[in-house]
Length: 218
Image (cartoon, rainbow, N blue to C red; front, side):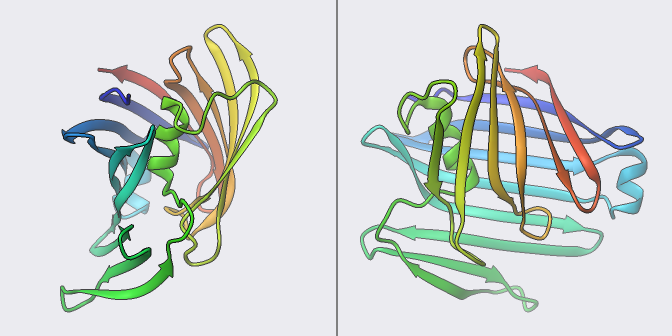
C-alpha cells in the first residue's frame, strides 16, 4: 500500500545555488483514494529573471488491483502574470481520456480526447507506482517502460535501474519534461533503501543542468 509522505528539495542551477524549491507529497484523501503532488518555484536571483516561476502538478489516484490508477491529473503554472492550467480526466467507464484547458475567459474547455484502451500514466502516478511496487519488483540492470499521456504526441516513460547497493540505488528516467515546453530528457536519480529520492539532476534548454537534493522528509 502507498505510504503518505512529504519530501522537500532544494534545486541548484549553473552559477546559482538554492535557485528553487520543490515539494513532493502523497496523501490519502479517501478509501483507496490518494493525491500525489509536486510543487516547485524559483527563488533568489533566478526568480527575478524567470518571472517568479511556479509550477504545480497533482494527481488524484485510486488504488485498484495493486496499482495507483490516475483519475485526474492537473498541470498548472505561473510565470509573471501568465497563468496556465490543464487537466486530464481519465474516464474508465467510457474508455476516454480528455484534456481540458483554461481559456482567457476563465472557463474550462475540452481541447483533446483519446481512447483509453490501455493503462496510461501521468508522471506522478508513474512515479508512485514505481516506488510502491505497482509495476512489480525490478532488479539492477532492468528497464521498465509504461505508456504516458499521448499529448501533444505519444510518450513512453522509461526507467532504467543502474547500481543497486545498500543505501545507494540508482535509476535513469526518460520522460517528457512538461514544465519546459515538453522537452524529452533524462532524469538521473539516487534513492535510499526505501526508494525515497535523495537527489536528482537533469538538463533543460532554459537553465542548463538542474540538480535537486533532499533537505527534509516527514
